[in-house]
Image 1 (cartoon, rainbow, N blue to C red):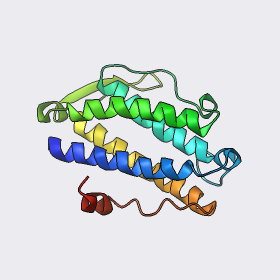
Image 2: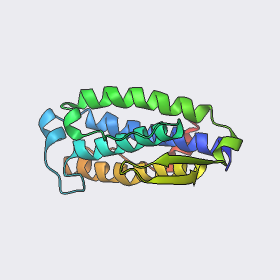
Image 3: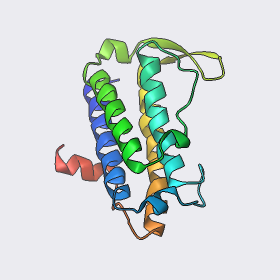
Image 4: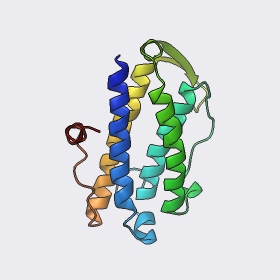
Length: 164
């Protein structure tokens, strides 16, 4: 896998997450916490799940295997979630920007939340995280649109056209 591609993929991921989070910031606290007919039952749940995935995988890539999940109740307000997201995004992007092609193409071992040991090539796991985020950003975008706050298009080609 190509180092530059993975880095650009993660910059896209960061851009798309920001579009969602910037839109969520326009909601009332009640809308942020309201039940939704989507997996994870609430917009907050969708966002916490997305953040959790980025956090847990970054921890795994740096040699840790967390055994506890981030939970929606850990974030009583959108501001608390956004603050934590910013911290975790900084760590994630530092890891991504420092990655080498040798490391991308090497296997790494980790233990799942259930205690099962796995081995994957690093780039495969990194690609998975962005793809996983895309699914949940789509769910969040659907909830936001239903609430009258569409985040707009999240297409990767739009990000590429902006030359970010």
